[in-house]
Amino acid sequence: MKHTWLFFGMLAMIVLIACAPVATPTPDAMKKESPTADAMMNKATPTAEAMMKAPDQMFAAHFVDSAPMHNQAFALVPDKVLINFNFTLDETSSIAVTKDDKPVTLGKVMLSERKFSLSATLPKDAGDGSYVVKYKACWPDKSCHDGLFAFKVDSKMKGSYNDLTGKSQVTIRLKEVKFAPATLVVSNGTQVTWVNDDSVTHFINSDPHPSHNALSALNSLEIKKDESYSFTFAQPGEWAYHCSAHVPQNMVGRVIVLDDQKLTTMPTKALMEKPTPTVAASAMKKKEALDKLPVNLIAAHFVLSNPDHADILGKAPEKIHIEFNFNLHAASNIEVTKDGKPVTIKPAVGQFSIDAVIPSDASDGLYVVKYKACWPDRSCHEGQFAFRVDSKMGM
Image (cartoon, rainbow, N blue to C red; front, side):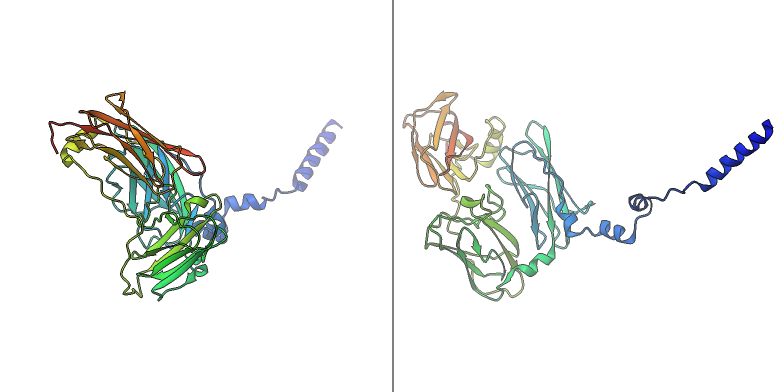
């Protein structure tokens, strides 16, 4: 009897196991184990939606802005990657770019003359995709900080731009705090004129904000109602610009310049040119003096200073002059020290510049200029530069 119950018990277990339902993998599990052809294609060629999902931006110390800016989209591959800082960069700084997770071969990584910008050219045929820029910003003390931003290129965007090729002159209206048209394609050599129909003042400034140096010649002074500003595009590519006074309102525009159908129109000068500061010392002496000077800090909208940072002068300048490409508020100011002691000055704030008269009996020493540039919205940015006066070195 005992063996009979044991037999039936084992038989019941076999039946239960045989009848148990077989686990069916979920669709998600199946995708993980064996990707579909569509999934593999999407991984190789990301959709527009996937391209928009860029990684979070990571800011290195002293980062100011970049061109392209994070999360921007272009119809053409930008001519270069440009990153601006407010501190002197070291030659060991670097840039690396990937497109859809694959390395992009860049041109030589370059520092600007004043060593506040880091750039590298992109290959024109790099093509559509999601680009990630990783950079290393290194300082003279050899310390380095990492940063990251991303942008995308989608050539289909070009189809939505206004085609105005073949025209020697094109007009864009500034109306209702917008550019009309905001996006256009022109031929190389076309003169574009912006006319302000609004009652408020506008600006035409090259990206990025606030450095405005991706196409540095494309920077106007203020454009009041019924006034205009003209610029002739003589460099192929896609150029992004904006109105500095209305960045929060997203007043932005794009101009694609084609190299074909080149016109005979000669390029006009930009309304605002950057004067070349007088340099009283040789390049060699200036380079040697750089390492011994306080850091040079660049405020937003800074254009130039005279004296320039690291200048060595045979005698004290009559005045200090600092220029900006944005309207200054009267709260702007300058402070000057010589060998750590205050210098009595007479500051004067103009529309686009700050000046300070230096005492006629100013003597040899290390001069440090600290300035505060304030805008009409009462926001202020600080900057600093330094120069030496050494009567023994002469002019």
